[in-house]
Structure formats: C-alpha cells, structure tokens
Image (cartoon, rainbow, N blue to C red; front, side, top):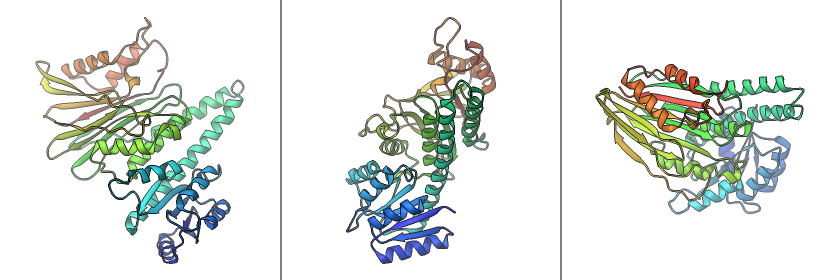
Length: 396
C-alpha cells in the first residue's frame, strides 16, 4: 500500500489530516516537526508527503529541499500546506516553493475535498513516475551493452512507445468529432496530445512536443500530459489557455527538467457560442479550414510567436479567440508532420502540409489515413525521423 506522511507542528491539523486520510483507506503516518519528518521519510519512503510551510524548527521549504535532494525520495510527491501563494502578488512564493521541489500547494484553511483530490492526483503521478523510472533504468542498463543487446533494446523501446501510445485518447464523437494520428519515429519521442470536456460546454484540446528524443523526453511529455489531465496546476483556470501555459512555464522550467523544453498548442472550444480560444508556446500553428467547397474556402493559421515552455520564467502568454463557422475543420500537428526528408534532400515543409490539407478538403478526401499515405510516400527513409502527431477536429 502506498504510504502518506504528514509533517505539521500543529497537533490539531495532524489529527484532522490523519483521520481524513485514514478514512480514505491510506496508510498514514505523522511527524510533529521537520526533522522528525525527514527521519521518518527516509525510513518509510512514502509515496506522498503533506508538509506545513511555516514550522518552528525546520520550515517546510527546507524539508522539501532535503527530501528532493535524496535520490531515494526524489520522486516522492510533495504537497506544501500554506497561506502563501493564494493572493495576487505572492507569485514569487509559489515560484520559491516550486524551485525547492514542491509538486503541489494547498492553502489554509484546508478544504478537505480539494486536499483529497490533490492527494489522489499526486499518488497517480507518483505511481506513473515510478513505473517510468523503472523503464528508464532498464533502458539505461541495456544501453551499456548496446552492441550485444540491440534486439532487446529495440524491443524495450517499442514497448515504451506502446505505453505512451496507450495513454493517448481514442477518437471523440458527438457534437464535436476528433480523429487522431500518431506515428512514432524509430526513437522514443516526446509527442503527446489529449482532448476532453472540462464541463458540459468547454472542450480542451492540446498537443505538445518535448525537445529531443529518448526516455527523458518521453518522461517529461507524459508528466505534462498527466498534470493537464488531473488539472493539478495551482490557481489555474483550465478554460483560459494563457493561464494554463503560464502555469506550465512556472512548473516546468528546463533548468529543473534536464534542460528540456516543450512546445504546446492549447485551445478551448465553447460549444454554445461556437468560439475557440487558444494560445501557443513555440508550437507550429494549427490550421482552420472553413467552407462548403473549393470555391468558398477560408484558411487560417492559428499560432503565435511566444517562446516554448521552459525557456524563461517570466513569459506572459496571450489568448486569441475566433468564432467557428459551420463546415469548419481544425488541424493540429507536431513539426514531425511536415519536416519530412524527401529523396532530393529537401525538407517538405509547413506550407506543403497546409496545401495538402487544403487540397484534401477540396476533394472531400481529408481522411487522416490518406493524408498519412501521401506524407509517407514523400519520406526518403523507411521510418520517420521524428514523431508524427496530427489531430483533425470537426466542429460540424
């Protein structure tokens, strides 16, 4: 059973939290100060720690630093209980907590339903991290014997790619339909995407691409995917794309994530008003194609010049909004969909992909399999150099 450790110098808070979590079926232990908490953490190896920020002997920030500095505890999900970071102007406190290694914040007075949700999300992410770390260790061991273990390594990479693929959503049907295409390259890459209803009226759609290849890129990609799915970014309105990108940028600075950054396109479609609000961080523009036939067609590129997530801490992202007319189709993709090496040595390119999407729409054959077949016919190699992700969103 996954263990939870509560560290708080207030006996009432400790008692209430322990009773609440025990009632949820969790194996829960308490510590009355930071030093005792660190000792218990090293012996218990908890999956999740809930720690008060303000304590007399050793504050929660220092406890978090020491916990995260221990290799055996580095993946422990750490929740800081604090009155900090809740009000406007105290963003620096949240940044300070994130820099120390905190994964989540819960403000006092504690709202128990919120705490339970944060705990569930934290335990899911911890378990996922543990599974991926196990895969990473296995792959690193295989790399030491690359020449003799090549077949085994390729099998493990394929298994990891299948695992990433298993996390991706199925096609969406209903008032909005979405088809997805994901073709991994020969290397384990960093593409991930998702789409889901935030409520009865708002549909979130996003696609991200982590820099580089390999397990590190896949780990970061899956971590971001699960943070977005669990909506565990603090003080974030997930219906407002610019807020989501800002929170991701605060949480995933490349200096703390193996010097890896990622691009992302994030949009929210409001069904009653047929309005799409979106923001982009260094990602290729989405393409919106509207019109009934080739004589009445409108093509718009939906992108921005904002930097990718993780480059700089102080970036402000901007939302853009537009009304979606009937007979409109939105295409969202990673750069692997158009950075195709042709037999003549030239790169196929973004404009060529957009032309393909337009022409396919004109002749009413914009099925993703047909688009893929054309792309693969241009590729000079047997396999793609980069993951290819392509979403087709039909608004009706």
